[in-house]
Amino acid sequence: MIQQREKSFLRVSRKHFLIVFASTGMLTQIHAQQLPLTDLSYFDKPAASWQIAGDVHADLDKQNLLTSSAGTGILVNLPTEKTHGQDLLSLIQHGDADLEFDFMMAKGSNSGVYLQGRYEIQLLDSWNINRPGYGDNGGIYERWDDARGKGNEGYQGYAPRQNVSMAPGLWQHLKIVFQAPRFNAAGLKTANARMLKIELNGVTIHENVELLGATRGSMGQEVPLGPLRIQGDHGAVAFRNLRLVNYSQPRPVLSNLKYAFYKGKFDVNPDYKKMTAANSGFSEMLTSNIDTKKADAYLVRYTGNISIKEAGDYNFRLFVPEGAGALKIDGNVVGKAGGDRINGTITLPAGDHAIELQYAKTEDWAKPSLAFYVGGPGIREYLVSDPNTVMSDLTDPIIADGITTPVLRSFMDLKGFGRLTHAVSVSSPQKVHYTYDMDRGNIVQVWRGGFLDATPMWHDRGDGSSRPLGATRLLGLPSFSIDQLATTAQAWRLDSAGTNYRPTGYTLDATDRPIFNYQLFGAKVSDAIHVLEMGQGFERVITVENAPGQLYLRLAKAALIENLGNGLYLVNDKSYYLRIANDAGNVIIRDADGGKELIVPIQNKLVYAIIF
Image 1 (cartoon, rainbow, N blue to C red):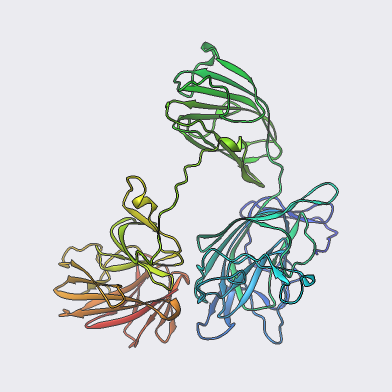
Image 2: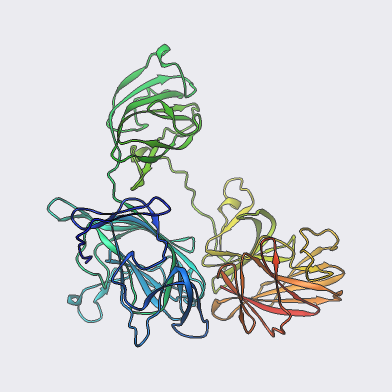
């Protein structure tokens, strides 16, 4: 447990985050903060194995090894035989919370993060695991009870939906949306803790999992508030961009709600003084389930008060069907009135405020529905209105599983670029996949996990696009793999002008995987992409016939490219590795557009691996 302090304490960070010791001596968090990690002052009596570093690297070939360099911004645990690791506890106590951070595993390493010091999310080098269990990366660790008998002590662990873990030495990202257990005034638990959502590397791996009790290794009985705890006695691990949002403030309360119902089609700003309501009265909640007298089109106006306990910026979201909505606080319009989705933020002082909400149903075929959400400082966004009147627009997904559809042509939308119109996505049984851009003869993204969500392509009329189901690594914005450079200082061309580029389709190899073919600069190019052993990434073999002089292959363009030696390179802030076979020392890392490019001359054949 955190020891009480005698002195009160106040810290204000660059992000206007407040940490306050209450009079009871308990440390609480009022607003969100990304810990600066310039020192260890946010943690209680850290052991010697915990350090602050400026950079850190793993070794793909050595167990449990991280090397760090001086600086700040990274929290790293380096246990040794002499410096035995210990768990790290935050001074911050949290209840409901969002926790988000980057982490890096050493090869074979094991760690974990405990919400409130009691509910563990496993961190593990699970790179080569095909079917993950509760003890793998991102798993909710099991509970333990010796009384269950030998061999049955462990129970109620939850495996991630799929393994989307990255290689040792690469930064991974975990986001946890946690709901603390509830207790009454007598200290009795009235509701279990829940993992509302956990995302690993951008992929949802758990959703709304109820935790019937603390997991194995808990620091004690369940409590309303507890510290963040990081396991430190198992293996080498590093963290950065550690951000905790503590939802500890009371929710706003709606009161004195009245409604007025008007028949007919209306805009959202009618003159109510000139209108007569067909029906009106008091309402216990905001809902679309009111007596509409079977009207096909109508307007409902709610008025009342909303009580704000703490001053700050509050966000409001209103959803209505195909019609028009509007929201006012103290007479001020929030968001843009007139649409079916209203979203706006307003700064409010503590106290009571007048609220007005309008919902105009303008289409006779639209099903009545209303959903109103509120979020604010120390308050996780929640549904204020009747949960029975939330319209769901979810569509049953149409999944390309990679077995029945190992190769799929579709549009593919890429962040920062837009839509690829000639994308070919290729699956593998090892659950690593890639997308090839036929317009430019290049591999543009790789991912681990499920294959493709083809719902946008095949549902209803469809828009022709699909999207990856796993953790994606973008290999740079789409461009040509090969260019002809007069000098190594010449900029890489942006389009096909002057290249005589012509795609000639693809052929299937003995395993029904495509080999892409194209022509440019008078040369014939074949591009074969194979899965590495144990699904660690891809080997790419580019063969060129009749190559003219001064041809170069661009393997990467990124903000940062690090040369680790022996043909191994780290790309884009430790996002993925490149390993160049038979590296003859002719690899060039050059400046380009404020970042770096890795290029290498090619005449006949070049082989390299993409490891992630």
